[in-house]
Image (cartoon, rainbow, N blue to C red; front, side, top):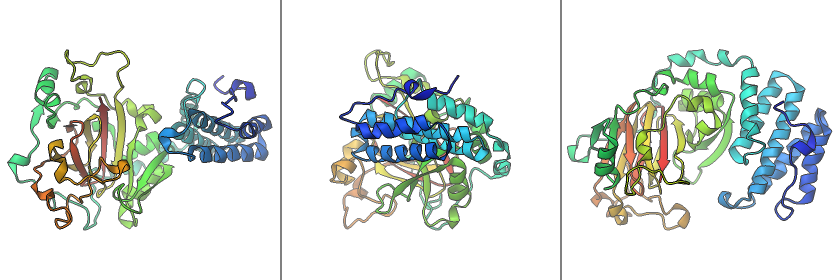
Length: 404
């Protein structure tokens, strides 16, 4: 009952000015082929064409019609693999579903999400995947001299410490920190999260090892050789977490809406109540149509860095396992932080925070800052437009909650 029957149920109609008729005909031909090598080749050809459509413009300017075409192509490719029936085909079907979920638009009552949930239950052998990873310590450090450690980053200045509050009331948080835009370390506010006790490398692989995720390659997104790739979560853990020291570059699952893609992991976390607080009179954001909280995952080995930058939304960054060093600068010192001149990166500083070139950026050392090391269970409030630099001190999993 879950699977669509034939081309008509797939709603293969698109705006002709966006998706050419010949391209639509290719997808329709793949659907009508039903099964076999011909159907698989046609569906993958349609997916390749859809990929070209997605890359025809900047992501924010890509037509929803191309994203819908991509999702439908991914669905058809997945159905071809399901009909083949073997375990390797089912894993490939999961991959196609994830491609559609990551880069496509929602289609047919979110069928890709429903289909991949069924496929995961059918796949055999998930529980045999790296049970031994449960024994890997969550403070595993990469033996690399370039990785910042607590001894490398000084934290001995009380005036630089981020203020701490233990379970403040909503009103206290709003008055003392949200309205005046002052960072604060919120303690004992997520101690009820199942993730804090359940999550290990083994647990993540068992729950989502076969799922395809986007991975950044390179220590920082400002690096010249920084790029992105797609791989399964299990491949990412094996290559860039467990065997990080043998890799020529750093892999980072960063700023990805993992919990929308994999709801089973979403059940292990809870949106902090503070994310419902508004700057408007009345305190809580109850306005109809207000933006939802955006939840992102940040998972990687020691040594990953987010360059000094600011975001347009408020953020509560929660540490699930591992440790992260965070340095914060007030927006009033922006002129000393040397933002990139290009529009694309004007929210990012040109300065390498831990190794600043004081000849090129002489005023950087004049800017006062706050700093903190996040440990499991810590939640850091970062006001919007507040500059922040982040460095993982061990392999680490953090969850960010952005709201306006």
